[in-house]
Structure formats: C-alpha cells, structure tokens
Image 1: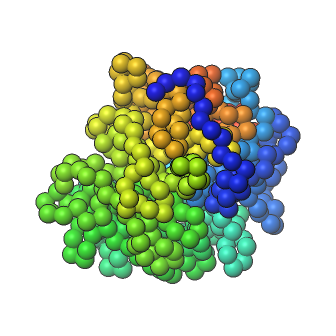
Image 2: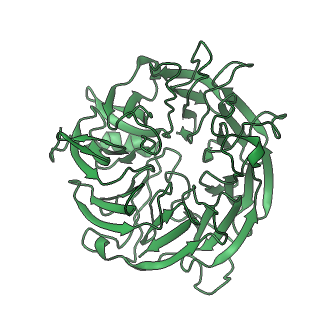
Length: 495
C-alpha cells in the first residue's frame, strides 16, 4: 500500500518501556558547528578522559539494537541538506585497499578499517591521522575469496568495563582486538573460531563486533563458502578477551550456517541471523534462521527457521534490528531481518518459534550484487520502520532498488520510493530532522547517496559517492559521512 497514511503513535507508556531497551540520546546544541572534541591542528592529542558524545555513531548500525538512527544531529535540516559541502575526505593510502567497513565516530575520532588489515583513527574535524595499526590478514591461500583479506566489519567503541577507558573493538581477518582509543595500543587479542583453526582453510571474519552485557559478540563465518565451516557465534569477555560462551548453528562434525551478520542485543539476550546450510547435507539445522541466545554463555532458547530448499543458498545477510510494535493494543518488542530471497521478516523478539508476525516481499530473489542485505532503520519516537531493498516492483513498474516506510505492526507500506540502483547497505535516519540517507551500488552509471524526507519518501538531496559501496551513510555531529568501497576505499564528510 502506498500513500502518506501514518499509523498510531506509540503511547507514552510504550516510550518509557522502550527507553530501557534502546539508547535514546539527547539532542546536542550549537547547530552547524562541528561538535567535536579535538582541536583542528595536525596531530592533536586526545584529552585524558575520552567519552562518547550524544551525537556520536559509536558502533555498527549506531547501537547494539541496530536502530540505525541518530536523534542528536544538530544543524542539518530539510531546508539545508541539499546544500552540504565537503568538509574533508580521506582515501586509503594504498591503491586497491578497499573499504568494506562503515565509519565509527566517537570522542572526536573516526575509526576506519580496510581490507589490507589496517585500522585508522582520524581527527573528526580535519581527517588528519591520529594513529593507525596493522591487524592480521587471512592469506589468499586460506579461502575461496581468492585474495588476502583483512578488516571487513565495522569497529565498535565502548568504555572498558573495569577501567572505564574508551576502547575500540575491531575484527581483523581471524582475530578480535581491543585497542586503546587514544593511542591504538593493544589491550587484548583473541582468535575467533576453534582454537585449532588459525591455519585452517575456510574461516574469515565478516561480522562487525557487538558489545553488550559485558561481552563482545562475533559471528563465525567462512571465506566465501569455499569451503564451508561450522558457523555460529562466540562471546568474549569485554575486559579480558577470554571466551565466555560459544553457539554453533550445526552439530559437531557438520558445516554450514555461517553468521555473516552482526548480532543484535538488548544486553541480556542476543539475536543472530544465519546463512545457508551444507547443500550436500540432509538437514538445515539452524541455517536460514533467526536464533535468540542468552548472554553471556550463548545458550539457545528460541529460533525460527525460514522454509527454503537446502540448496537455495539464501543467507540472512541482513543483521537483525530490534524495534517495537503495538499488537492488539499491547506494545510488543520485535525483531526483523531481510533474507536473500527478498523477504523482510518480523517476529516477536521473545517468541521466535511462533513464526513471523508479518513478512514483506521487499525485493526480488536475485544474485550478486542484486540482493537484499540491508537492515532496517527504526524511528522509535514516531513509531516507523524503514527498509531499503534490491530490485522490485512498485505500482506495477520494475525498479532497481527501493526504500519504504513500513508500519512496524503489520508491514503495511506508508510510502514507497524507487531508487535507480540497489542499496546494499542499511539506510540511516537523522531523527532530529526526519531525514533518511540511503547509499546505492550502481553497476552502470554513477553511484549516489540519496537523502529522503522520511515523512513522505520524497528525495530531497543526492551526493555522488566515490564508488560503489558497502559503507553505510552515517549521521554524526553536524555532518553526513558517505563512502566508496573501491579503488581505493574513500570516505567523504559532508557538512
């Protein structure tokens, strides 16, 4: 259904309930002034006490619930968003060093990891380098991607639970690292995967780490499915890096069910979406599923499996998003994700086994790069869910990509907007001005980032990307960060 109909607003009681489950940050002041904590001078040192600011974007999809919404973006409005100009840009120093991760912004710094395995800390105001550190790389001989691979996932920034010092949690090719945010000094390093798997062909870190409930959560995934590995999730003590629990999608001795996505959490439970099973096997086990695990030991308590042929190769490449809906007059916590079959599914987060409450065919069942890989963006004050997807049909017309405002209780579309190319990364919401940014991947023509009026879906601005992208557009402070993944990877800051 199209048009501008809006569903009922969440009640005051519901907002109070959701505040406990979602990080809602206050709106910062000083519009159109770069609200960063570093001086503009080259090589400026960090203050002794680094803190995450209300306007920051400190982790993948902004918070552990994956809302992809920032409600503290001063100065960028519907009236001036089409007039943004480049504040600074940064390119990977080495040609061919790609940018698959999205920027993390915290305490006046921008953290970026590249496929060469190097992570950079940049001054948020100027783009000048503060520090960089080389992490581990999976050699080309150890997997089916046929290339050496370093950092693919987005870094997370959070205080160390024991010392309070701001820490960057980032995954290299095989290891998970905790680095001092001010200097890049390593605090700990832990292997992701079985202890004997370091030189095993097939493993690679794709997921972005999620910090929740005193642990850091990482998916176990293969190196382009050649060969398959035993997928799952591992939990690491946030302060020490010690393993606190492991969950596997298939029994010992079996393979499949890679977790390509990032885990969502409310601090007590974790929701994980899983990939394809072994096509030569006889059982999908926990592949093609969403699973709820209890922290910190990762005990499985609930799951829902999508019915697909064992040979379908239709992963959940989309990370789950926690949101809320009013079902039969009761505020209900929900979780949703998109499968490569083009369907976005929404479940009760506490009762996955009951099956989806609703599902939408938001995109076609397609192959690379035309796939549904995006997570939703949730506007909790306005009770709206936004979903971007691959090629589809809108009002009888075939389109290359789309973005929709969706009723979180029913999946009904409030509006639909066609895009000229497919979005492969999640949309992001500027909740302060009700603006939605969506970056696209164009196999021909120019890839652009589009900014929409989230109230009605009208495109109000667009900006040329450096290249096709896996980089999520990010709203932080008074700026919009967009990127290109290739040739080398590049980040552009619009102000």
